[in-house]
Image (cartoon, rainbow, N blue to C red; front, side, top):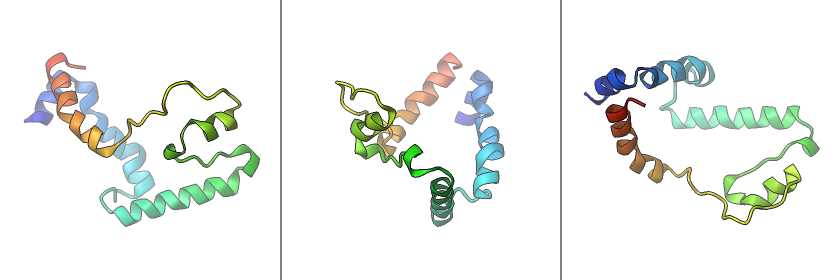
Length: 109
């Protein structure tokens, strides 16, 4: 029912699953997005390929938990006076999902 309502109120957004399957789920992960070990192996292979292709001095291997300092040093910019954002957490994303769906259904965007 939720998918039907989203498709009716936000038809562009309803196309997202098809776009995702065509652009990365099938070509990158062979359609095996639910196979955690496979997804991790694909990711690690990609990281190794990038590290092999880019000279070390031009590549920042960055973990979000590293904070502003290494990112800003690499980019040659000052460290902001605000805390590093912590918004890409699975639990927070899942908590917001019902609200996002409701907004799509009620507003159509």
